[in-house]
Length: 279
Image 1 (cartoon, helix red, strand yellow):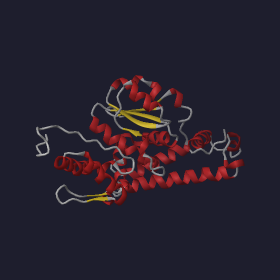
Image 2 (cartoon, one colour):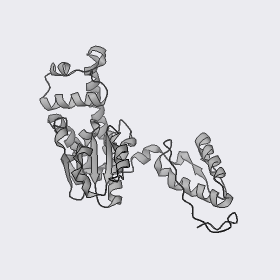
Image 3 (cartoon, rainbow, N blue to C red):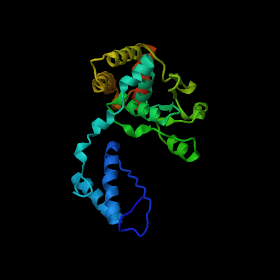
């Protein structure tokens, strides 16, 4: 409730910040500073001035209303807020399914009835493909409404969280379905070919599990281990592309290297995801 002299009566106010330029972890502090400005002045103009100051200078200072410094919020720390070690602890070798789905930019649906558990788990997943640093694929809390589903289906690949168990019946929404309460992962029939596992997947899966289960290794170190392996895979893929016309990979070109079938299949779909495939 607002009790400032600027108001003739108590009022309620709700503030929402949407900005792609700053990590979401800074928003609670930022909202607090802006809210106190609004209570004092009774106008959004002061808030807009403060916002522009942060946008241009990275700082907003006020003895009365508090200070905000964007440099206090390292985006890399925001990326590391989720725990990959917890993900691996729950799913073990099946974590490779999540890794593969993310590498191939597939659609992942995660269900849990508790939103807190849902947010904690989904936030960690993009770190499996750290080289992209793309948290825009994350839609942590989605409802089964036409409007929200339409927005979701306009995305080529995503991680979407649902508390509604009915989402398990919407196979049109996912390539991979994660049931958090029961700790199982399902690959849809339509995605099984692209998601076929082989020797390379087993190798990466063992690396992920071994690193995550090491009590001496932090989450950031586990992510680094996975990222190094990912960069190795991508470097090999780029080397293959460099040998091809227009630096674009073809299925025929891959077949000349006589990879195991599952590896060839994975590299083909990865090339498509990385826009290295000649159509």
